[in-house]
Amino acid sequence: MPKRKRAQRPASESEDDYAHNSDSSCDETSRTKVTQKTRKARKKIHENDGSTVVSGILGHPVSMHVISAVEPMRIALLEWYDRVHDARKMPWRKKFDPSLDAEGRAQRAYEVWISEIMLQQTQVVTVIPYYNKWMAKFPTIRDLAASDIETVNSLWKGLGYYSRAARLLSGAQKAVKELHGRLPDNAKDMEAKIPGVGRYSAGAISSIAYNHCVPVLDGNVHRLLSRFTALHAQPKSKRTLDVLWAGAESFIKQSKRPGDINQALIELGSTVCAVRDPVCSDCPLRLWCKAYQRTQPTASHTGAVEADIEELCIVCDPIPSDEDNGSVTIYPMKAERKKPREELDSVNVIEWRNRNSRDRWFLLVRRPQGGLLAGLHEFPTLPNLSGTKASASNLAKIPYTLLQELLMHPPSSNSDKERLKKLPNSNSSNNVPKVIQVMSAGDVVHVFSHIKKTYRVQWVLLEGDELPQLRPAVPPGARENDSRAKNPKGKQKGSEVSEVELNTIPQTLNAQWVPLTQVEDANIGTGVLKVWKLVEKLWITTL
Image (cartoon, rainbow, N blue to C red; front, side, top):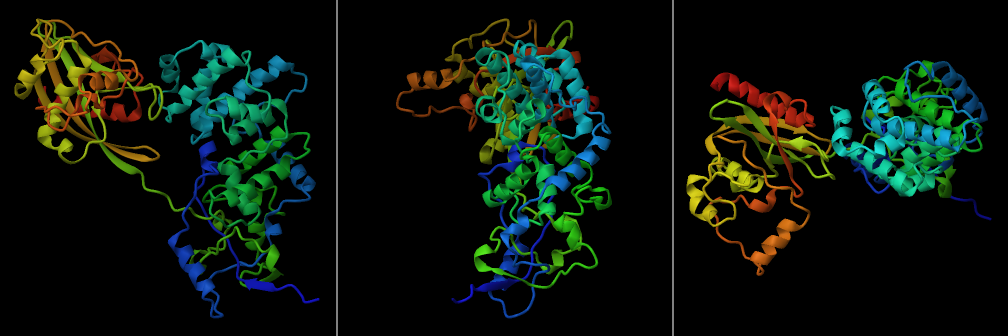
């Protein structure tokens, strides 16, 4: 019988700044592009003329990434965790109590749920005070369900990624309404039925609160297991994640302490197996860590390994030799980060003053419940401008467009008086404020995870005898239905407001006038606060 063909290939490794504690960080549907250097290395290998273009062992069996005989690893890991589990004083971290009844375990699930959602892409030291305030305000899931988005956002203010807070509220309300006031007691139902809970969060909650043998894979565990198994592969590819989820499951399978093991892996990845400066000497798993073994003086970095071609790993990518720094930080593979898309928004800080008392009020609008900065307040904004919409002449007209949407009796621009006379509620009234000035305040740049926003800020000063009356909130779809009824053929009528259209403002507006002294205390995001500070600087030079 002829022998199986054997393949000889050089080795593979990598590095990555993968530090998120988020379900989205392990999205199996996403794909990470191979870095340019890796593509070049691959091409050279496929055109191999006998020279070594990458360091380490590329030709290796897939079994290299399989974690087996885990019992001594678990013992070492848990011994380490028992010594350090309380070092960072995390109030949500408690030992599993088997004596708890169903209600007691459901309460633990609630506590773990809140902490895990807060910890997504946020450091522990930042989360602790927020968690304590939250539990004081909402000690049970029923207390949270009885609240509202304004109260929830006020507690979340400054923590970022505000959609997390909205999902916590909706998840609690669903649990109370449909699930007898408890989170599901298993990972499958938790992931399926609770908004914002993905595979990672479901595994963390189920293993910690219910002691179920369900794995976790957040950014810390992803990095830890990539090094532990010397896996140099595209971090977010399905093949990579399948290997890492299988490794995570190996640690907790048939364990008596799955919750502690999961927390130990997360803690180890966060504190010891760090992104840039890992402390391998403190790692309880270093004896079994393939990345650590590779850094030892006796390790071979350039030799080839023979393996059955059917058993070769097809997940790993090669490492160009100039990226091999001889450290475990070669793993995981460095992902090519996408640049955030850039958008320009016109932000209008609209102030009203009483002619007599000089009271100062500012107009805030609440954003929709879903999407970016869900439910937070902001100054009236026209988003994502481009071309002629962003011209100086057009920007000066935007406040009038916004005020037509927001006020029962809006002021009119000189160039738009004839058109506005035909609109409802545009008749002359003592309650119509006068626009005293529209002044540019400059730009504020604020970067989200996927969007780079430039806020072009204007200060708009209104004056009148009475605080202008606001239009009622508009239900979803009302504007589109109204415009279709008036213009069934879909034709655009001419307007002196140039490229600015009335129906560009988000629906279900909830606008309110806020006194000067209360603006900073409102539920506004960090970007809006930057806008406010910029306008305050403008006043110093103009008032």
